[in-house]
Length: 173
Image (cartoon, rainbow, N blue to C red; front, side, top):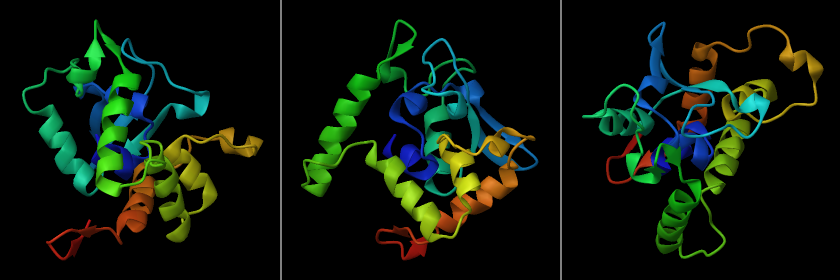
């Protein structure tokens, strides 16, 4: 869950509401389709989006999809009676984060903030950042057209995540 959130900018409810059927491939780009489903709603209209899966998130998705049927939730342990329980997932991940970091102020939502910072540091244009994270925009022209391609968003995520070092492996993600 932490890897998926940190590499995509998904909110915790968005991530735990994923189903195997939300994991797709188009033009050779793996991505997740975020749209409302029976397990969870989306926070805003701009939250509906396609997010490329890159780096360690590809391994995480592969692991999560093992043995899971097409419409089953990937995070089945946080779904009860067909509804995603973001509070339970948030509590678990926040507890883990605080143990790992020793900082009581760190929460699962920090993954979104950190990815936003990494996208800015990589020089990714703000509209592309918005398309990836599902953040709102005050520019009405951002609502015109089809939006950014999966390839553009994938390249932006790869650029942002390129400085992450895999501990002990000496390689970037």
